[in-house]
Length: 70
Image (spheres, rainbow, N blue to C red):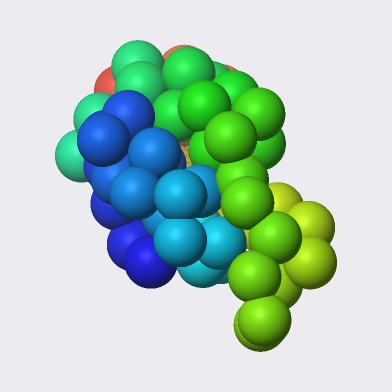
């Protein structure tokens, strides 16, 4: 399941689904959502333990200053 909120993490955990967090939409919710998912994940037929993926924005540049600017 793809989500970007604590609610999505909770739903994925309740049904024992793998969870992918889309952090570009809510970067401040990343760690709390992963915590909710990992603490609440219920084993299911396709998943016997929590499974998480994270989508991130990445900026690359020649210098740190240029990357911060981007």
